[in-house]
Image (cartoon, rainbow, N blue to C red; front, top):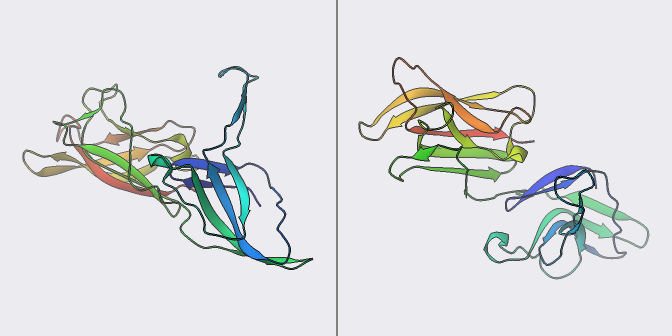
Amino acid sequence: MDTGQALIQGRLVEILSAESITLPSNTSGKIVVTVDLTKQNDVSGNAGDSSYSVTVNQAYISVITSGTITQDDLNNGGYIYQLPIASFVSTATTATTTNIQSLFSDTGWLPLSLPSGTGTNGGSGWAQYRVKNNMMMISFYNINCVNNVNHNQIVVIPESLQPVGDNLRYFSIHNYNANTGYAYPVMATVQSKGHGAVVYGMWNYSEVANLTGATGTIQYPIG
């Protein structure tokens, strides 16, 4: 198994170095990435210390040769989720594998964090994200940014889901006034990894003074 990442129901699983697995002979089945919340991770040291380390036991590669794949809802009381990444057929001495070109991740819509001081107008606004087929989708409505530090901070993106590369990413959104129904153009800046996690807006300040109704949808690949 080569290095790579998979996002399984909001949990980032990453293979940091190539791994080898042994397939049973004279059979067929699937190779899966397993998230198993019945197991405990091994922790040593104290968080924040240089000696602090975690051995992850809750995520691993496994082989399924019989029965059905288990795909519990890990966010609603489930314990095990198996993501198939390849199928195989083996003999006594050889094995043939085939990549499964399936939906690698679909988190469904999840809530996004707001920067300190950012809120919604009358509780009517919202901010969500979804990862599907390695694409990050961000959608927000009626977000009021007046009371945050720079008066333009809209949402906070988890670091693992930020764009990769040295350049920032720019998208067209709007400053929506729910009272008048008018939307003013705004440029949303999405920071790449290592440059900050806040999505912020830039607009024509002479046209409208404050970003009181940030509204838009943003999409980009995370790989």
